[in-house]
Amino acid sequence: MDLITQAEALCRAIAPHDLAGAPLYIVQQSTLPVDLSRQSVCDGFTTPSLDLMLRDSIPNYVGRGPCLVVNDVALRSETDPADFERAFLAVVVHELAHILERPIPFAARPNVDPLRVEF
Image (cartoon, rainbow, N blue to C red):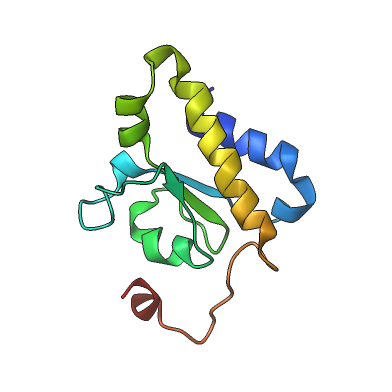
């Protein structure tokens, strides 16, 4: 099982009801274009409209859902290779906690043009 699949399964095991019926996007920062925060200094991040901002960079985008980014570039440089998977999953769980503390997992923005959100 690849790391993204493993991370999604972990999130769905932790929060089955909160994540039911919606896609969950876990994005590795190394897959993002340079202009989309490839040089971030944090290990991960999420925002209520992140899936809209990154939808063109998410190959399996199927519609609105909670989204988080893991800075795999920083983790690889900061972490012993034997601990990378554990560090990656720890960041995923940390970002999931931010998603779950919101009133809703992602912001419904039906009347806002996605380009405006990205801007």
